[in-house]
Length: 438
Image (cartoon, rainbow, N blue to C red; front, side, top):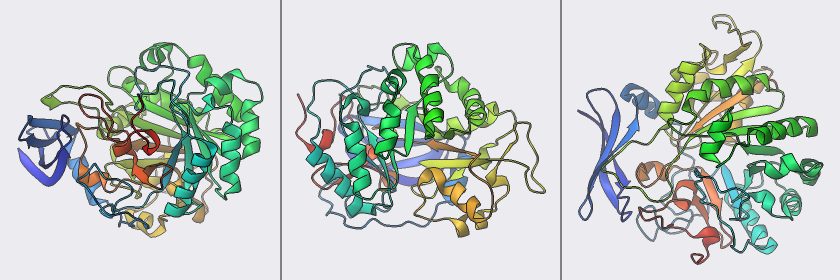
């Protein structure tokens, strides 16, 4: 066993912040171990390869601290808002407009249910103002839920954001309403929508039976086609579940490349637990597992070290690569797909020199390449995001989170703490900062 570094982690039962040791075992697998004085020890598998883990950590970007923070009133993960301990500013901010949903997915970090009161338009206006105060109107806004299309006034919500000056507004959706209603997506686009963030877990019906409760592959394919017809980009968001769809990462990559005229990005997100769990040695799927499996299934297009930190948050949380369509520069091997990883044509010095902290995480590489005269409209952004739950949460990493959920009272709460639940399924932060809903 080799200790790699010290950090702080949580007891999943009481959510106490505890000293933790991160170490590599004899097989080079990375673990995080801590002991709660009340609930005992827990070792969490964090990464499949210690060398890769340490390489990513070594590639961290300088931190841009947030402005307009609040005083830290409690140990992490409590008291978020964003508190003065936080080390990176938000770059992607969410507005949760409903907890209602037209699906009841077995895999859902939001644990979306029906019957709650949605925030009012005045409260949503306040949440837009939170974002403007935190990062300005140049920040990316994602409208999420629950399922945002359950709200009849979604076009008005989009229009409000545009009137407030936000240039980029995307909706996080399962696609059921977009697929079912002729003209609905066009109405959203006319209101100012700039992107669709579509849950898209696989290319066979059995995957959706496992993740969504029923086969809706035809719905997903119809939404992609509707986005093409409406002239709006779509990002395919994949909740990667071990034993369910982790064997389809290569197929999803190829589908995205074949549809790169409308698919702007492929976002791979290892599923994380939100609810009840009991373990003394937890084995969640990490972003590292996804990176290695994606490379293995990519038919030689990608290698694990082609996927670099995106700079906006901790390097273990957000990684990615941009696949350029066209003839690669000298020294970079061509691939039958007609694409090549931009990271093979950039040095890390080039990357750091060209990096802009104002680039949304999905366009970090594209912005650098465009400045260098590379055609990027026909390329594809691939992002691997490593969300944390009570078992896997490294609270030092949490303090570098750049993905925030806004609430009407003026707070911007890091995504992983906003959705955090303890071992009994109790949320730390009730929706919209209100009293816990009954």
